[in-house]
Amino acid sequence: MSKNIILTNQEIEHKIKRIAYQIYETFVDEDEIVIAGIANNGFVFAKKIASSLETISSIKISLCEVKVNKQNPELEIHTSLTKEQYANKGIILVDDVLNSGTTLIYAVRHFLDVPLKKFKTAVLVDRNHKKYPVKADFKGISLSTSLLEHVQVVFDEKGNNYAYLS
Image (cartoon, rainbow, N blue to C red; front, top):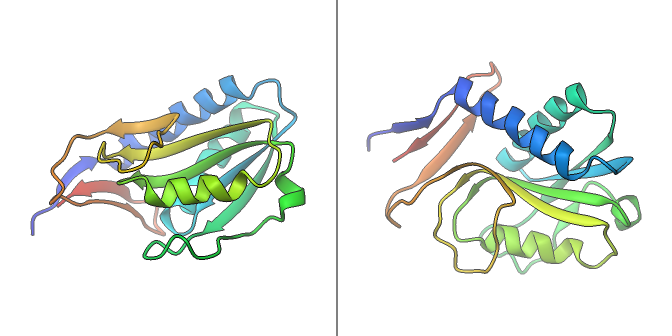
């Protein structure tokens, strides 16, 4: 199966910086925000956004890893922060690819058990194939693809990041 690169490392870096500025603009009045990344690539992407945000703002950033069973999202969701640690704060839920919206909507539901100041979502690639009414407030790129195509984001240890369509 062939790989069609849709985002290069440099393009991903630009998207991260732009999303960081959009988050800063949205949460400029907050003292502290929580950037919650969905485990694996979503959390890596969240760390990259947090790092970029730290260079442009003085907002205190807490990182939170969100573990969702992607095959069975109704199962309990685990977070690296307790509910008390993110209550009454602004949260940005981050994932690498928004496919059907299943993972994102179940993760959103988890955070709605506590009062929040603001809640936003961010993704690197929005596939536009949603089966749930969930949207990305901040997105790197929107793609209209066929359901047979697959989008994969690669974040490797050497910093060679890219996204491809197969």
